[in-house]
Image (cartoon, rainbow, N blue to C red; front, top):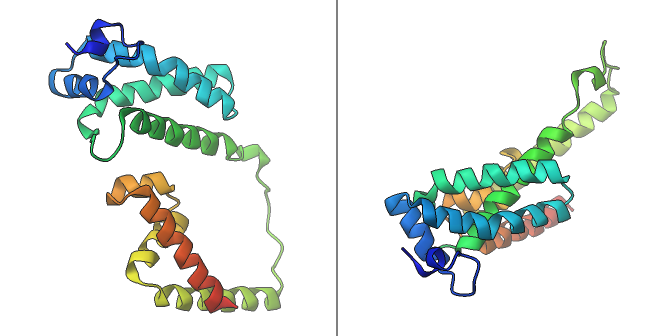
Length: 187
């Protein structure tokens, strides 16, 4: 049992990497309980500060901590600290919840035939799409793939990092460079 589990997990001697190793290797419930006691209230406060109501924050925290238990084998201390890993899961869950709640209800959707778009507008959009497609093809593959994942695959930068194994900073830099190139190509 690690020092954090012995001390209740709330003191300054907490070794969260050791706790994660015990959870991953031995499915240690005491280590998970220590982790839960420490992170659950902090996650709830983080989620509430980000705009979720208390009940929804509590639900997300429960989901995040279940994910920590189920996916402990995916934690890699060489890529992130325990708190970074847990807060990334919480941030992604928060985004999922917000997306789910932002979708319109069927009764809010317009019914009936849509207005016919103006032909000049349609042609202009087609030309812009072709220009954008051509500009995307000029990007280096490393940048183009990340832009496609972020904007056509609707993935967050953290989700791309998890999928590709690239550091988050590298992803952000490559996408920023890609946008600069696209902006120059489209001017």
